[in-house]
Length: 134
Image 1 (cartoon, rainbow, N blue to C red):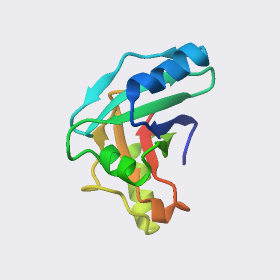
Image 2: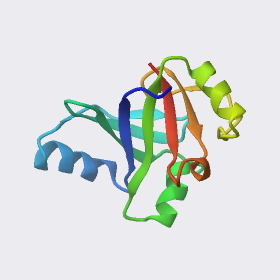
Image 3: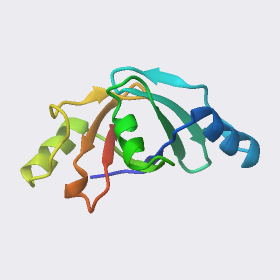
Image 4: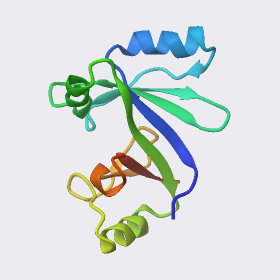
């Protein structure tokens, strides 16, 4: 069902400092910041030859990234994102097996302009999983 790894997301307390590390220290190509108010994040993508790294910073008081950074102030891996061909079919298959979809269970548009869903980490060995329609 899952396809390629689309990105690894890292929550960061200081987005500008994180960009400097990836761009200037490691020499990676880094996108411009993008605010996603519906997700409560500002995101930047680090482009790699085989995948991406998403740097996430909180946007607004209700941000899930702000809550994550309260628990892990230095930041860290937040989630893995895998591509799926049909997000509705993937959601139906997962819920039929008892997996939980976070939120209201309906896909929302993610940072790449495509439908995404998040799966409960307790159902995936402690890892928050994002599915993005390819």
